[in-house]
Image (cartoon, rainbow, N blue to C red):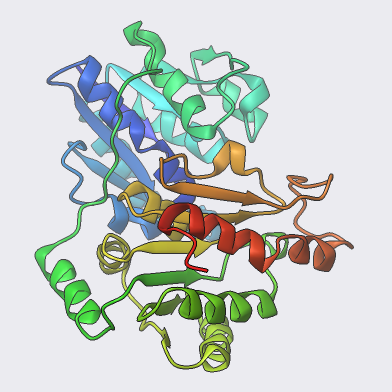
Length: 349
């Protein structure tokens, strides 16, 4: 059997969907599983031994110039590549217009996707031939994806040992080891302070106070600050300077190199952001801070992954802007984050 997974973006959402690969290979030995991903996230999926063919698309570029010769050539090439694989099933676990268009390009007559209540964009219903209704206990986004792919095989994913991983090269692994060899012998904490919505950020003084407290509580530890753009680099450079000795700002890493480093640090702390989800996917303990988004729905779920949800009654509002943003940020206290770290590595006080 040959199937196609359509899960194109965003980074955290792709990571959440990775367990479907483990599920499919367990329930259907010998299955070929292809995947469609947006070009910016291609790197994190490359080398995955559970993926037979990785297809990449550039829908953002296509939207900017929908009628250009370059766009027409690229779309035609994707269509030919997809139809050349003759899929038995397409699983659309993206649930919007762009994924629906990929469904159509595949030429497959058996496209399974979400029911209307889970769709980001209802127009997706026009492109799927079967919609899987949600179940009350499938609250987490990973379970929602697994529910869609599990239906044709008649085996529930609950209770199955499903694994995730992100392939890294020997060169990436060696670079990560080289960096760690320059650090002190204690624990290595990595903080990723950046994210997308302003209602997902924590407050600046909190990061500085947390850094100082971690270095005081865990002797010989190191605090690494990662970043995703120049604004974030400037911000965390200020954090590291304020924390002082034991804190440093990382250089910019490609996704594979960053994943190799995330595999080797002792703990990753951040908001609802891709690096935290990557860390959880490769088995590194995480502490994640949730405000506008819902940690129970989209947070890491491993044994050593702890979610700190803002305690305000309006938490998980999914608003991108809010008049109570400052209050919400500070509702997650440094003490709450330290307590979460303590559950993983013990309270050193």
